[in-house]
Length: 64
Image 1: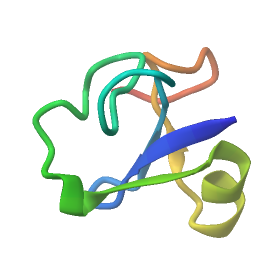
Image 2: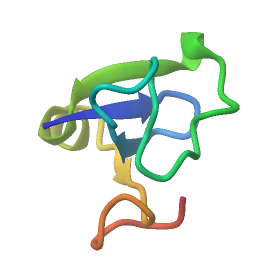
Image 3: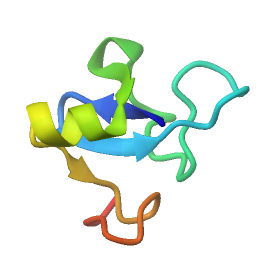
């Protein structure tokens, strides 16, 4: 499953497939410039960049 990584906050969000660029389940990235966002597999983001899961998108996440 792909997610949207906010490289500024190092937070991963669930990607809403079929929606416009970088749309997430929680909508928290709607105001972030695309240059700070990256579409990446969720597990890769968590393991390689130690990203924090969004609390709105994931039940085991932190904040939003």
